[in-house]
Image (cartoon, rainbow, N blue to C red; front, side):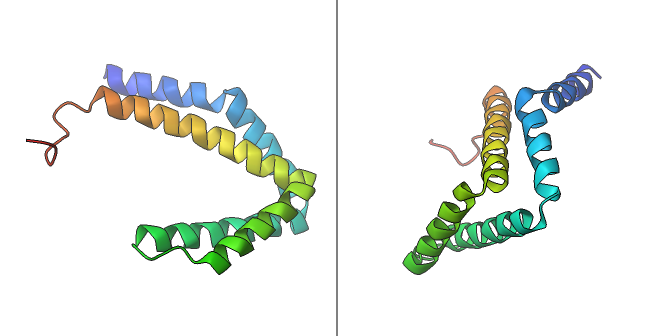
Length: 116
């Protein structure tokens, strides 16, 4: 089926993209520095927990937001952690762009609960 062929082609293109290659290189370097890796893991865990709270309709916890900000300030001082976070963000943006393009391409008929 041609759609599957194109999806596999897209997968190969993403895998060979500059953004993904930079992400892999940053991850490999991060994996070699346990203290930096732990710092990044802790940051992502707390960031994800805060995002879940907001999605659940809970108000923003100012104390947790300040803690995240302080953690990020420490991360940017650590070259390995900072480079990983930035590479991760760039690849995530690329992936979000691709998802949006696909979603926009098949949006017709997907608005079951849209305006009437």
